[in-house]
Image (tube, rainbow, N blue to C red; front, side, top):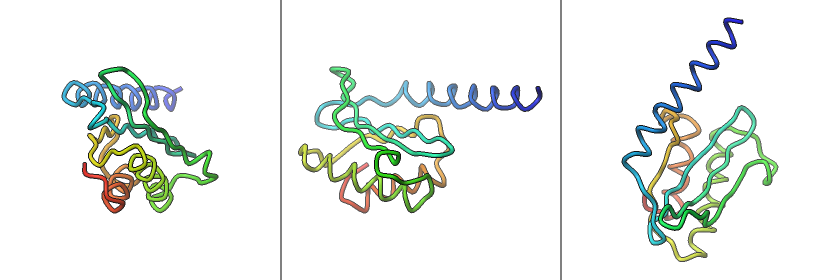
Length: 119
């Protein structure tokens, strides 16, 4: 029972951080918001135009057949960067989605930068 309460508290704190971060960032068609989601098995990201409320492009390590770690986060970021460049987008706003900026989340951002996307 204590483990369930700890997990609920952890998720609640992430949602609280997510709301705080999202109050300050906004994506447009020229500079979309890149939101990352990570679970214990996979990592996924999507580029979002908040003006129209549409997803421009999305990638997932599950569809690529990869599990979640720092190296694979870089591979997923490279695929998203390729999709963004084909759509003519060079600059994005990074939404860490309430996660702390280290490990997989930081590796994903570094992967975007390494592939020519400005954060």
